[in-house]
Amino acid sequence: MSEIPQAPTAGARRRRALSVVLVVFLLVGLGWIAWWYFESRGHETTDNAYVGGNLVQVTPRVPGTVVAIGADDTDLVEAGQTLVRLDPSDAGVALAQAEAQLAQAVREARVLYAKDTTLAATVAQRKVDLARAQDDLARRAPLVASGAVSREDLQHARDAVAAARAALKTADEQLAASRALTEGTSVGKQPSVLRAAARVREAFLAVQRDTIPAPVRGYVAKRSVQVGQRVAPGQPLMAVVPLDQVWVEANFKEVQLREMRIGQPVRLTADLYGSQVEYRGRVAGLAAGTGGAFALLPPQNATGNWIKVVQRLPVRIELDRKQLVEHPLRVGLSMEVDVDVRDASGPQLATTPVSGPVYATKAFDEQAVAADARVRQIIAANLGAH
Image (cartoon, rainbow, N blue to C red):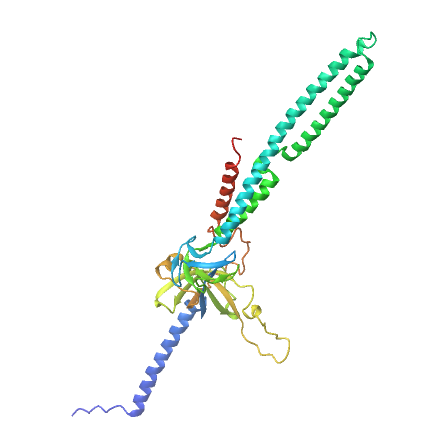
């Protein structure tokens, strides 16, 4: 008769459960060690990261009263698009006065050149008069001995030569004085014309600046200006945010920066999209100081009781522009950053100086070009046939 197997005791079941738990813990520990050795130890992560961007302030350059607003918050605007328009009445009157002064200056300069021609003709006439007087004196001088010409007539002839010579000298001096104002230059380069032209440019730019354009392409934010408001130069009216030029500023602990270098690849996720969207980037640079060093009231660790606090250093991370178009970000959003620091061959700080402007706008270039064109038009209209 076969024996009936006995059920395992409670102690045996407990030992078996503990063995299973121990094996599971060992496997998890080995897996974590392997993950840390092959993957995690070559990465530095932080969730203290935020999207940064340029907040391009729109400010007037001349005082005026707002008569129109061309865009509101959240609107997309192109570079050069009109955002605010000021009342142009006063600037228009000043421009008309400046244009009239320039036209007068050009015509007065033409008078100077015409005077040169007149004085040159006068000099030529005085030379002829002097030559005639000298010939008359030369004819009369031999006839005095024979009595055909009296000494009084001879003296009159000599006086005529002296008078003609003095008149020629006066004409020469007048011509030299006139040429000092015109020699080596043209009507358009006369100092008085240049001074009047500068006033026209100033007034013309004032009229142009009554229309305030968008410096860059972007989205309008922080609009505070209202129609009818009197604004002053430099007063913030609104901001334009170019969301295609944003970056991420990640604040790493100082102990995380040992192997961090410029150019290292970065993976990022935004709380806005979650883990479904992963951004690619690169370390663009490490700040020159911690956040506390640039605070309004920096810490004074040399006085009083002191407790060490781990400092954080801002790290600038550039993003892929194509990804920004597909999944746009907004300034100030939270990000999670993972920097691959396994390749530490790059520099910690920039080694070459910046060449050329980092950011620039051409929205205001046409204003100066138009002012120069207007000056040339006025000068040409008042030069006459010359």
